[in-house]
Length: 404
Image 1 (cartoon, rainbow, N blue to C red):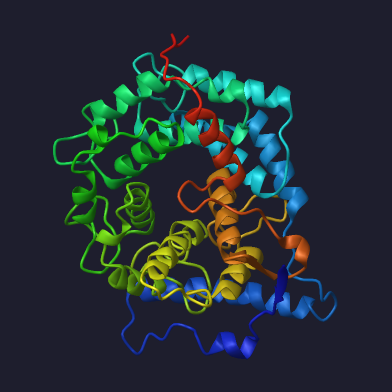
Image 2: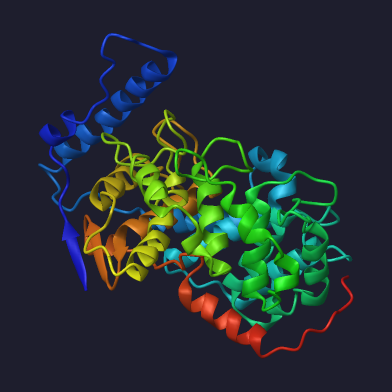
């Protein structure tokens, strides 16, 4: 059942603005500037409510048109992302599924063929055709193929060679390099675990010492860093937590410290999340931070202390995403004044899904038509598509094929 949420009042908002307290810094001034821009958005919406009570509205059609256009033809502004083309397939397809859009079979076949060209002869995927195998675009390509949801897409993945690639990236301490001779960070472990679990090639041998290494990435703040000794970060924190859950080792973290850090990343005035302490709000962290709550809920449930309500302000988060992060021509953004892009469209919609769905109920700000699809808390893919892919790979033999 879907329930409607009400907007925060202007008076309620004004009590939560940032206070410089006579000690201005570059950081505090940027925060105040951002709040001023966001305040204008909120004030304008409250004025418009006098004319139209059916606000805020998710601009669904505009977002779908924007995404479909970019799936077939990217503007020149994306040329510097040539090594992220498999990522763009994932970002666009995932956003479309959350908006309830079906991809026709012809387009599915074209995307599958393109991603097949991104697969390296030695296993794994690059960001584009003929590029180096890298764990990040491997994760994106596998997710995109799972989103396509048919046998043609599934059969693109050479699981035998993929497993060998993951094994080569594994390091003795349990960490993973992102590519041959590349950097080590927590993304590598998560990407490797995600694709291995989705495609049924997860084995203890490939992930020896990985749980222990992941735990060393939790910082004194409570969140996870990219590697031991670095700063806690929203994206890395989701990766670390989700990786441990895939390994069924979520109990190893200090979840009280993690939860304390996590709840303090939601901005009191804006309603969205920041990625790190003393940073600005950003629409994409509505998923990287917000998406971690579902996993924390399950840890609390295992301690016989399940939460009875959201542990963050889902109303405030939906306000920020719907009022401040929509481009009127389609696509979603980081914050007011920023350009639209498919990355922020994907993760902002994912964050909206997190804010709307708790347990078996939905809490929708604005008209009920604002409701978007559910996401799987480990993979950020619609749960029905995850289930369909896992069933297929569980029933498929592990056979290597030649990559053309």
